[in-house]
Image (cartoon, rainbow, N blue to C red):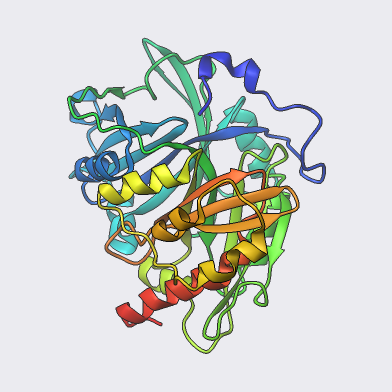
Length: 385
């Protein structure tokens, strides 16, 4: 995320990008994403090794935490926290979450100027409180945090850190490590996708609109996102400055079980399906991640027979894109390049999208059919289609 010492440089303009959104919070960006996992040390090592993250901070018994251990990794503006419960204390919520969902995203933390006001504004509009505003202090200053519930067991935590100069949060210490793999070129979180159950997309789109002031950026129905066998629907919700985008997916009727249904079955309900991370050089990023063992969805070679006619001239070498399975799409603003990993957990749930935007502000509608056929092929191998 941006340099927190220069918060004034990142206050969004009063001239909103999306005028129908009401930025009564407002949101300055994604602060961190926290996973609840079975083994935080090993999860952090995987993300360092395979995706090019670096050690940032640690919290546990040595820092005064008795019920959990957390490792924080960072790559440019992306911060991921991996948290594991310890016996006793107040760790039941963590154990229950892992038992039900496996390793998965619990907290999508949002960087705000005023965590008290953010909690007040959202709860008075109908949000269920996760925890009331609280001040956390150490020798580096203070952080104010508050939280609300969203779909499934996922929560949003509002983080106000304008009076904090520490590495991450109070009760965390700097994590020094001699193991420092190089970056894979990931820059920031472009969007995060939530999967919800049948008939729930509009419920949660309304939540983000009425409770958090988001606008509906774009809607995809089952005609847009379908194959011979499966379909889904999606609404992309965005805050006023466009820094936070949350597509909300739900299943749609099809001949076979959709990826959304598979996710909900294995995750045990609604949750964060994937994190889309931006890069300035997708060929480099994907090449590096492949070297480090990350597996990506296979895109049929025939996709590239016609993609040039559809998207027109691009700067990248189409042969290289085909070699790596990187897809291309164009909208009125430009084009984008994207690719999707296979699930990063044992359960077929959470995965990453790698995206490079060359002006395009859309989400790759022209790639949906090829992408979903690739996902269906994986579902068929798992016996869950």
